[in-house]
Length: 341
Image 1 (cartoon, helix red, strand yellow):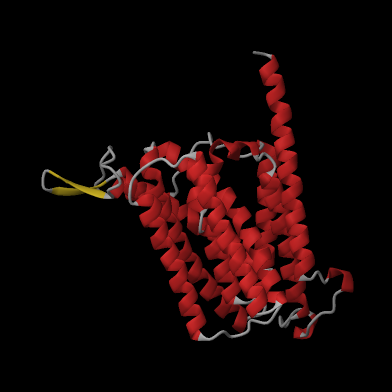
Image 2: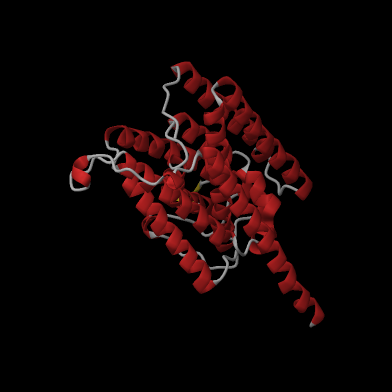
């Protein structure tokens, strides 16, 4: 992995400012006027945001160097894939709370902004921990392998995820519902409303809390995953930010197609396990734990050294194979259903 070269403060400020401006643009272009985006609108804007992410990656490659450019693309593809997995839960939450389609954009945008803020905090904490304690890579690696095993086990035992699955609120959402004054009806896209002189939270506010808690849980996977591909906080942040940009449009673009990605969980589990192994190999080579080899680095076989370019190819290959296999599986399952009609 490349060293975390320090970038000038103005680069960070300019990048954060540009990303914030894009989110503001997204709000005024799509969210300010409540409506349900058409397939064409979602496709055009999804392509636009992916194009921005790719152009940014080319800029990193050209103005920084090739290695950081490859790290960015590997991180972006990984984070985008994990974001698609997030969409399953987003759809389930929207169905569970019966959010009107024309107001779902606003809820999603607020949830995505919350996700970016929380990931920014996690990225900063992760960078500080890595800089001081090299053994953090052991924790990241073990956590990703455990997550991969859990995801694969769930996929094999219960089958593919479905947007018809039931949503189970976590403790914070349940506390919010049980302890704060709430209404049962939506009042447009408002988060609160005054009734009989008393302020109540609307179901939209609860949806935002549910989306935020979901984003928090998904960040626990995504941040360690990308730190397995790069140790540059700037790449970690921008790959996450550009993966989240356009997620709103992707939500409406994919829609019912999510249920056809039957092997997505298997593919993501393979990617997380692969990155987890990379992290542990890196931790072993930089070992400082006193009870392992006397606190000295441990040499590993050369074939375990997988560079970022090869990692990018492996990640793209896994996603391509699982996507094609998913579509073929869905197609073969749909044909007998048609014949029985």
